[in-house]
Amino acid sequence: MSRVRISYGPSTQKCVWSKMKKKTKKSDLIVEKHSLIPKHVLCSDKEKEQVLEKYAATIKEMPKILPTDRAIATLKAKPGDMVRIEREDSQTGKTFFYRVVSNE
Image (cartoon, rainbow, N blue to C red; front, top):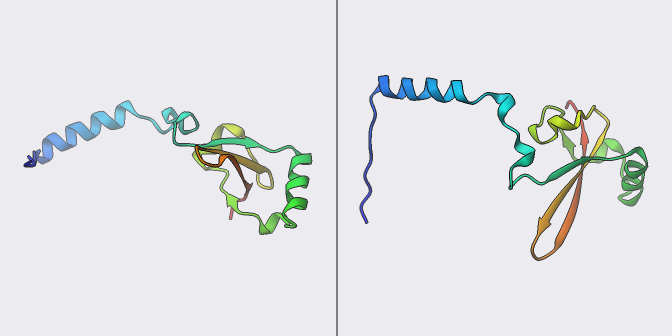
């Protein structure tokens, strides 16, 4: 099987790129509905305390996630909040991961 490569000139590339930029805005990208993005849920204070107790950890020792992360943009999470990430796997079932929202 042979490959065919098509080259476009600079003016065509510029035209295509400008049309792509006009069609897609950053606010239009809703990543939490994508099939490859696991479900992100904001934890309650009670659940947060239970997780910290279960893993014998402090807030500073937990893995971090930025408040600007697109996966939690709609959660309106603030620094110090905890997010539960639910991942589905055919072999292990549902697995939970926890992240603390941090500006660091």
